[in-house]
Length: 174
Image 1: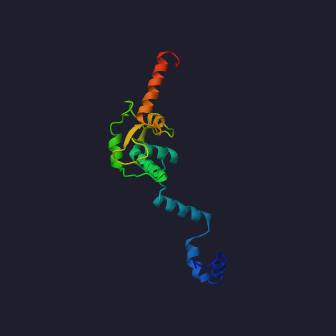
Image 2: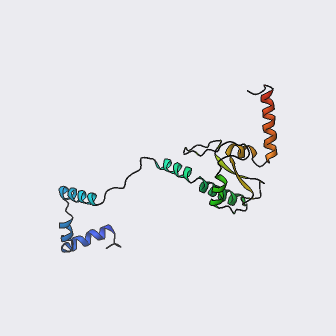
Image 3: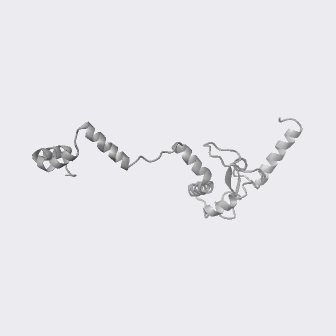
């Protein structure tokens, strides 16, 4: 009967009421019987325990706990999009993340469970841009440092920072 249309099923049911008599008796259309059976079913099959967190909050917490895996997938996608070589592993990224200190600025890196980007959040930096996300050419730095560096080198960021400090020393920047 599964391959028949609903109209065909109704017609078959009308032609052969004896076939469905036992089922009709078992699955009564009386509301009190339905309510009793529903209660019996729910007693045997309790609903799953729902988390108090929303799906987005659960995802944020998962990302905070599995940050190396998230960085791995971001780098892999970027390498594919840019056509760069890629041979990193999650374990390698975990080792790079271990000290939780930016090697270029010396600040402690922060991983938050919030949805927003934090300037001190860990970020994978290509030491020599364009050579790909390969072991020996990547390091974990703060997101703000990586953003400042862009496609330039470390020397350009250092020169910019030095100029900024000089301007602050003479009082041009507060």
